[in-house]
Image (cartoon, rainbow, N blue to C red; front, side):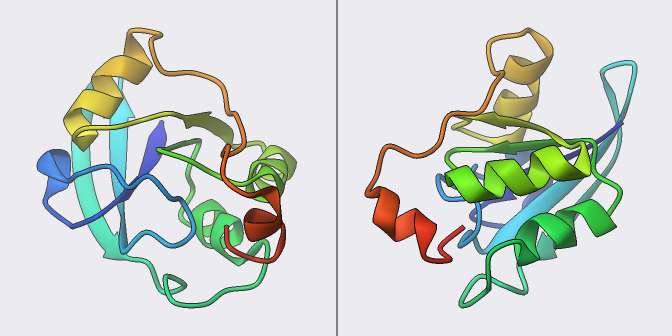
Length: 126
């Protein structure tokens, strides 16, 4: 299973989870087998400054991701992930390590669109 986490930096499992999916500076990709971390890779978000709706979910999909963890995400991004068959969980915080532990223990599941201004997210900011 491959899990992507939106992050503020590329410090592996110690990276801080970003609270905004589309505009985060980086993503950490974690390959997991039986809940054990196999590999960890940090990648800069090529769309952090500007992107059209759907570009970031496609980028994540193209990396073979099964699960996307983030602090927050807009409704349209969640919809794109659904179309790709990628499970989304929002509400992640702390480090990547903490987010993974919370996901595997069932404390982090499901996706709720950000409570921020809906207009903000519906105009390409995800």
